[in-house]
Length: 156
Image (cartoon, rainbow, N blue to C red; front, side, top):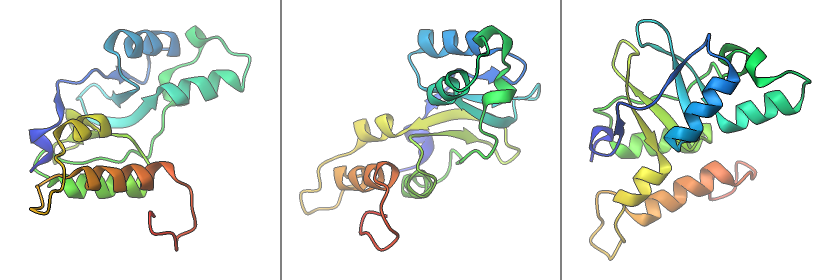
């Protein structure tokens, strides 16, 4: 199974010049928790999550309309490609502790978005015949993303 088989095509995105109020509205209307941040060539330059907005505004006295996406976004973005095998994307999510990753071309242009929720919807129960993507694969990834434990822990 490949990332392109599961990813959301044509995801919502924002530009670094937008303000956080605009980005929050886009997150709300799109019903998503993260927006890839792209430049004028559609190349991914960052990612903005609902958490990024909350932390940025909760730790300052700034108004959302006065703070740019570029000031709050994460610049070190975990990425994958459409042709990547899904287990490779799961490893990236687990190692970077993220629930969502932009899917990009070789040039870095946005092609889609992959979320752990979408992956879960495509998972099948491991009944001994080892499906391409099992509930156990997703559970292991969620454990790696959400559980903060020492490197010797089995879920890391």
